[in-house]
Length: 399
Ligand SMILES: Nc1ncnc2c1ncn2[C@@H]1O[C@H](COP(=O)(O)OP(=O)(O)OP(=O)(O)O)[C@@H](O)[C@H]1O
Ligand SMILES: [Mg+2]
Image (tube, rainbow, N blue to C red; front, side, top):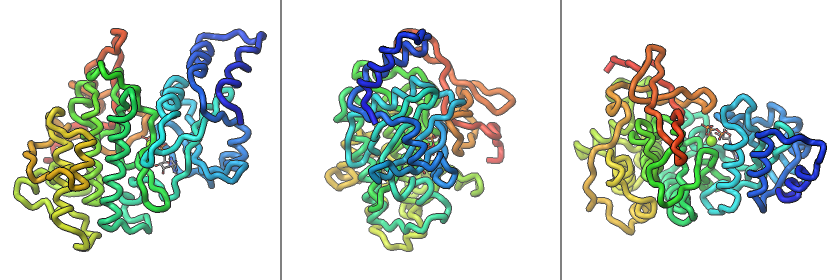
């Protein structure tokens, strides 16, 4: 294992090598990163028994994730960036830069990385209980019972982790991909937010600049998905969707359900209007919960997903609402922003990997792909925006 600075010196000290443009960029990026462990490819290959399929714990848009054991016995999650992924070296290093110095009880710890030949690998602390997507929302494939206390602690933990990124880290960080698969659980079911690969340093003077829409459909704030407007309130929206999922024990979209039940937020809003929010509580709680608190959490979800970003609370306020420091019942709630309504279409909000993300936006083509209006980055360059979103049956006229 070595650190970045020695790695950088070694690379520069190789006179025979004629650096091409990407190497120059890589060296510049690497030189700016310090205090992070560098692993060799060989070390990680040994840790994962040759990246054995038996040790593979998941696969996302960035590539495969393996469970590994380092020489000193430490369990790690090893995320191998797939070579065909559109996320290249820059994004990989971006993830490192963003998270290298950040430590919080509710954020997954990055131990180090590997930049070895064409290999780009991240090494994280291993979380025993997988992601919320696989456990709580995994359709009964998990043996974990999430009682109300556990759910409440998970909601508060995620809120605290996000509040830290939004309000304590300088410059602020917008995660951009808050969703159930990016919340991992340790052995005590303490939640840890993972995946800062899509996160971006967020200069305080740039509140509405996005070079690209990342994130996963169903969790995306409409203003972000449609216009690429990115600020912390887009994360607050995603958090609101997630809280509603945690309380109800179901995914934000379930196309197997009858039309009026399919979209969780739509359902939550209808129930709220009828004063029947408690009905949304997960049936598996079997009534073993504080109904008032369940409604409070669902109201927080609705406050976070309000259509107008300005009306959504900050994450610090959300923490206070969840812990009872601020009375949620005193808050007026306006209707949620629903992407499907905004676009006048019904979208398949199911998961798709980052690698095959199409463009989305204000027009659509017959192949079920919609395009997003282009946005410009801080340098004024026009870039094509996209989201992690599949528009299967984009014109779903069944309801
Ligand atoms: N630190 C970790 N500890 C334990 N398991 C992990 C860890 N990181 C990731 N995983 C597992 O690997 C899976 C894939 O993670 P990954 O972040 O690559 O994809 P994803 O979050 O499912 O999708 P996306 O690429 O859209 O973010 C996770 O769902 C989780 O089950
Ligand atoms: Mg992830």
